[in-house]
Length: 318
Ligand code: FDA
Image 1: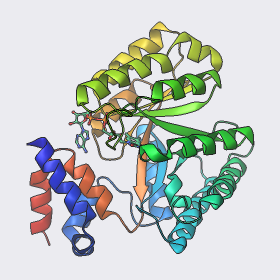
Image 2: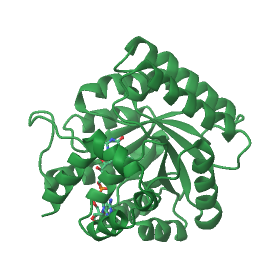
Image 3: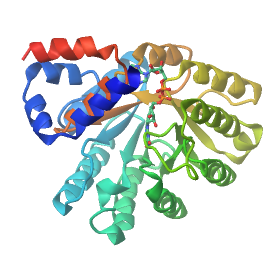
Image 4: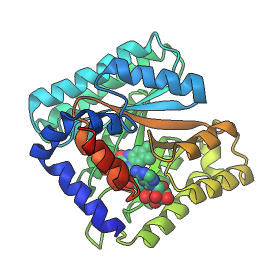
């Protein structure tokens, strides 16, 4: 039932006719507000400030737009990320700026991806005003074919001493090796389960396998060796059991609070995020913004069949 519902929502996310129709409806816009900050950088900052002031929760900004395959869209994406960085200098926030390699040209002019990532990284470094570790460029991880290029981008930014971190996916068999290398380098990495499906020889296919690998990787991220190397773990899951296990590991292996963090998506299990923050844990929410909000919002709605009632009510509301 859950899979069927999710597949239906993914099909809706892909249809541009449905997108145009839904983005014009007030009821849908209201429903999306739970998952998306608003149309522009100003609304994203307003959400980040509210989260920090009211809940003590940090932010990771994401400019919405998928399958960026035209140069003018690439430029729009880069401009949005630079606009965030420019505004950060005057804000009292701790922010990650999420970047998909395809958003900055991997499908249009791949040779420019490195220079674009560097210019965003430099703008973020400038906004941090000499406080290392304050803000950073977080590389999201897309499908298995771009893992090497994404890791290479990350390494290049770090070599230039620009503030960068990278996302690793537990569904991929190779991730353990990638993680061991990043731990030894004292890097900053975000662990997710992975929103893609891969061939059997590269990926774990079932939920229990992916979960088991996630747990194994969390144990590496929060090991004593990782702490000693200066590695910074970001545990990005809504699974409260895994979060509790991570907390137990952190305590057991001597990780002080704020030397690791949890990350979740805006609007998903907010009670869990808030409870962690109240315990003094460092929590960050992934805060998407932009005009192209339908595909993202409908996928989040699709992750939980209970959202079906909300969806029906929002459709009826016009
Ligand atoms: P899982 O699906 O195991 O669910 C755990 C619990 O949360 C369940 O009880 C479930 O019902 C509940 N839940 C989950 N989603 C819900 C929803 N929408 N509404 C209500 N309840 C919900 N992937 C990727 O491939 N590349 C990337 O760069 C990223 N980046 C990223 C950043 C951040 C901050 C997060 C949190 C996630 C990603 N992802 C990602 C997505 C990730 O790979 C994965 O698909 C989702 O996080 C779902 O897995 P979980 O472990 O969170 O929850």
